[in-house]
Length: 393
Image (cartoon, rainbow, N blue to C red; front, side, top):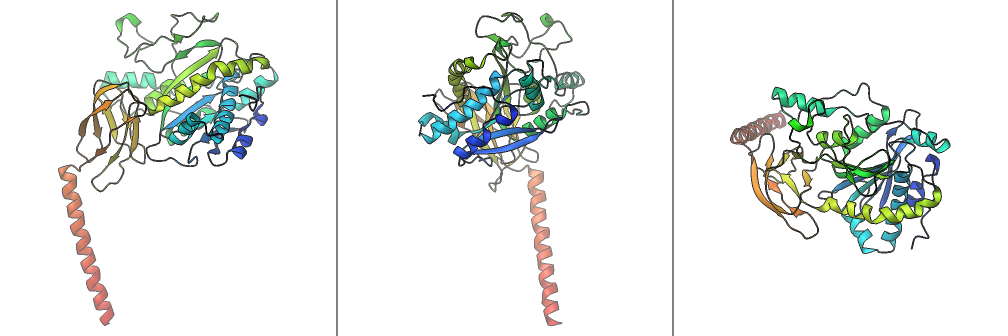
């Protein structure tokens, strides 16, 4: 039944986040990523069993829309999705309960509220935040050519919009695993960074993976099946190269702002796809990296043999690595600790395979820690002597 869903367009001030939060206060929380150039908040909603904080072992997922103010379908799909999850969770729908209790879901319907309000008044071009991110592609290629460490990617935020800065800060603050941003004007899915350099002939290069967009239906007037989406400074590439999050861009259809009467049909087309996409965050491997005392190790590097893309652990020591079924040699590395490799097997059953690491200090670090312990014992002994003398005085 969909009688509780609102199939109409919402302006910035009419978005339903507060009403959903009031209806489901135990599993929802509203927060702000920051402000737009005109002072509007970039509002996010979290749905989770414990929405206000990250839980160790629980993956974080983001779904965003509204990078372009006049692409309205994605925004309405996310507003409908938060209504749907709230209502279905309260009605004890098993699938909705698994999603909400097993994932920390972040929904941001409008990443460009200024463009949204402008487009809501007159359907026209909004502000293109999607291609306003630091160009890490060229920085990475230069590092590769000079033999520098690829994980040390510095960038300049001087010419970046305030909305983009807020989004970058948000990306770096939360340990996102998987994400999607909804756009419009075409019908395809665009994948992130594929190592194909734009300044060299394509035939002379070997990309890591296919860079063509996947077309799901009859192409729109501006897109052919073989069209390559070539641009730098994009949100997807930045996410892939500077965070742990694999993010896709899903273009929901040729019509960016269809008539309001089409929204129910758009929901029926996209509901199952959104739910299935969210479930993919729990595939591959996950685990916690700890030291010998059981303390979490933040920013440890997780490498998978044969895949030239590492990830790092969250401040709480946990990590998630999206992988297809198969056997993988996985290595954990952390400064001051001996590296550790183990075989992790990903099966076809639902859920990620547990693959945790208990790291041991390197020999030199262990000796320093022992010396440090001896020094502390000496200091404690001296203090005891001083206090004994003080008592006698």
